[in-house]
Length: 428
Image (tube, rainbow, N blue to C red):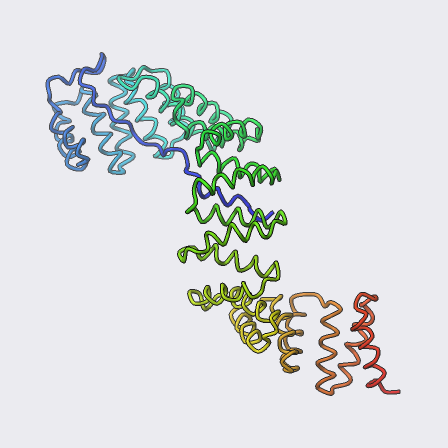
């Protein structure tokens, strides 16, 4: 199959690990009250996302507020947003040491540890965070802790990661990312049936990420008819998505539904900003022998990519089968100049050159092809006729005989011609 999980590029990953803010003024013990307003100026800067200025002011307060976990929390929050990860770890650790039951500080410490690369420590801290009570946010806040834990576990333990995503989904059932995260991890761990159930639930609600993951999963299992159904829905819901439309065209073509594939691709290829669809359509016209339709598309594509050997090959083949031999020869020569090891093109070039009575060029093209691909009956025959036209009987005889030795009755017209010419040119 030609699809190879193209749609995976469309799927957004789970939300990246981000620290949570904490703005509650009436924090329960052991987090000291902030009602005195001692950090209001600094937190106003944080609210305005002026993290560098806020950090500077918070640093200056460390001597007088060293035992205030709120200061360390705010400092870690600023440092996280300034990508000072190791400093953020140290600051959040101070906050947690002074307020061990503070959910938000524990969660942010786990996230900072994960960012620092200390995944084992991050897992331990985040597991602890899932059992704490948040100051605000209720179940959704705890869902964030499970979500963060799931992300940290993705590489090391996909099954445990899936279970953590499921916990996050229970607490925040309206969050599609955690549902899909569980599906991705179940797929990674090999439980395709369970993964499909997660993707199907999401896709059924119209979620495009769920559709994309479901399509890829079905495609992996060669369930092409089901994948096609969902891919059509995806394209209908995302008509401007070039990658999805291209994949649907490829899938239909692979299923032998060439005309349906052409219809799908033609709609997207109308947009000049979609050269990939235009290219796929041009190739499909070649495959279905619609050479007149392929030619203008390849010409248009070459305006933007004049040094692309595959486009020169495509145009050359389209011209060859329209009997425009001179133009075909020119394009095919350009293709092999740009890509000297382009094996299949040498055969087409030989055909065009022979029709143009450029027999020496045809022979050189056939010999070049033989450096990359095994000889076939017709390469011997074509080489023989070229030598015959050039009145070089020795090589003509040799290649006619090689052709007859492997033809096996599959080429009756050419076999008749070869025997006739051998009688005419082979010495008695």
